[in-house]
Image (cartoon, rainbow, N blue to C red; front, side, top):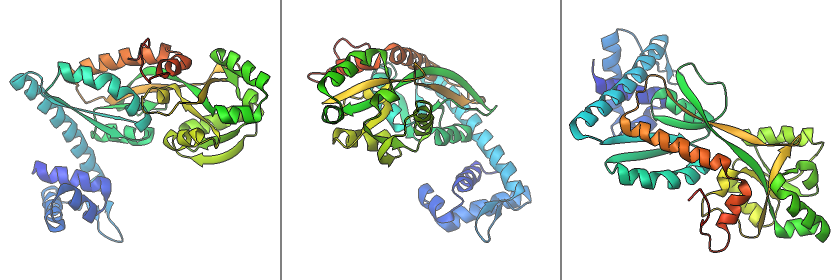
Length: 333
């Protein structure tokens, strides 16, 4: 059995597109087809339905499961041999939503790289479902995802809870509330505000998992929001808030990156039924993926960073970003 052919089959089984897979692997379609035929001859069964479009046969499903398991075992072996031969040389593959990668990686990767200069960090961005699928397929070692029902194949641990806040530009706040009301809202901000307190504002909402949760929060608060914009991520809604279009919700994690726009923005921690709105994040890996020593150190560092983020009040992050944009006085820097 040819391990190269197994690897090619695994990639094709994920794409189910001969042209795209061949291009991604930098081989001709004929070369890729020859590798698949070689496997089918070896196993004595067709692995793919060719018409009307590419699809896995029952045998193909079984071979794909074997190929993914083999890929994880190969990664374990490669890491073990690298540690034996060269001390600490290897690769650590991590997946998370872009907003979390943008916030957490600058806090963690530089000090880790100084301690482990021969370890390459590879980051793959994706929503929770995409990151989870990559972990299951063995394409990444670690995933940072939202809480959910995890497959029995995954090992999971809670990392931290990120509080949800509402970002409101000052121009929009004074347009919809009197000066005295604005002062009262700002004075109450450290303890959090309910959506009913901010119901006069136009809102940008999202279709992602946070957006679905916030729809329930609006309903429980008895608020039918005036929706000015609907998007899929905070990379769309925060710039529109900065432009004065509408208030937008996000998590405290989105406030951390130094390039996230906050000038002239009010940040109000949100409450649902008097309790902070928090979404839990989990670290996942495949049960069969044995982490090398440097990866375990990275996980320990990640736990520490996550604990710091969780105990930092969202308004403290904003205050630390004020002025020259430096984070003096913040535990996050």
